[in-house]
Amino acid sequence: FIRLDIKDWWNKPVDDLSKGMQQKTQFIATVVHEPKLLILDEPFSGFDPINANMLKDEILAIKERGTTILFSTHRMETDGNGRGVM
Image (cartoon, rainbow, N blue to C red; front, side, top):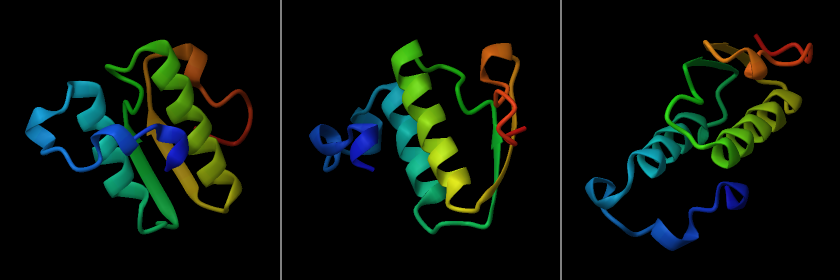
């Protein structure tokens, strides 16, 4: 999870984190066990463009490791780009 840039806030209580950092924490908790199926509801909502792209790259990396990923989004630019991510 180095790519998600968490080292500076790893030991902070969740309540002390910004909304975006809390969302990253929730994402990490969701994927840390390497599920075979990952269902995400609006995973990019609330993220700035840099962090949304970082999260998208991580989701694509998880997909490349064989995880099936389904997610909902209203953002057409994050539709998976024909890579098999829906």
